[in-house]
Image 1: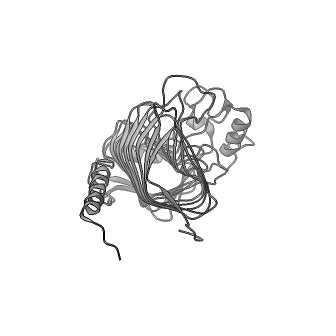
Image 2: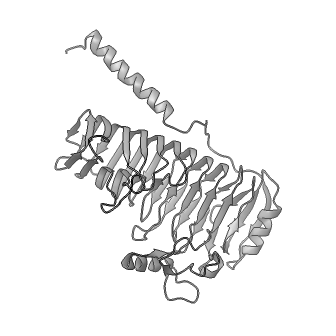
Length: 410
């Protein structure tokens, strides 16, 4: 056996040191531990009917540091607001169903539950705004009822989404959980299914933890992103399982910079992948994705934008990722819309891929904006299946990939 010389060993340890320093900087800066469910202030039993007023009254009267406990049964509800310091505990076997009455969610424009040239006409099912220390806990289920016909209509939320796609307009469907301008918010162990639109948005929030969350909506349901921490910082998404009709995780930066984000120990099924973009004009930085399994999806690790909404994406580390039956295992695209105009130029640099196993053939794309603003990426121990295609343009890639990965599953 040939042993490495001292210079080779020094180089090796230098690479490890740089990688470890980069990892330390590119994650949630908080020390995050598994959440505990706070003590309850009130326990409720569902009767299967609309209990919006009962739930909101209980949340409003609950003391800070405690939770409203949905102890048994099925609850149907329209929009709810969770106050600061208060939580909602949906116990095992309990279902909180989103009402299918579109009028309950309308923001006053009378367009919720319609296809329109206008967008964002619905309030969310659960809203947290300018709160601190609030959360949703428990092993129960939030059912968005996306495939159920709306009250007084012949279409479901998902039908509206399909019509909007055909007409190139917007479906006005509610997000299930919307967190805005808040601090230290927790989602723990909850299952969120059949979303009419996005499952979870955490916007302009400092300190957001999604631990052990299951998001499950059919791949055919359009615009049903899993988790979108847009303009947020100090975010941890861990031990989560996500299947959806759009991005499994979508890190945007349309309203502020997104930074210090950790995605760890997750399992992604069908969807559009672990995504950054497409709106990133405020920039995305300091992200680590580690111990991720992806299968049966359109995209794997994706960064997407264009000159109408681009910005800087930097210090992103993907480590210990396994993919099977993924059409585009890695896609870094600066021309997401080829007809886009503007001066918000996408720039991706400091993108690192460590220990990536892609077990089935797919297309790998590194499409930079220009030679002056190329994609800058580093590959280390990237193993791909034979028969894959590798397309690069305006890219500076350090390291190499190796063909030969195989296997039936991760």
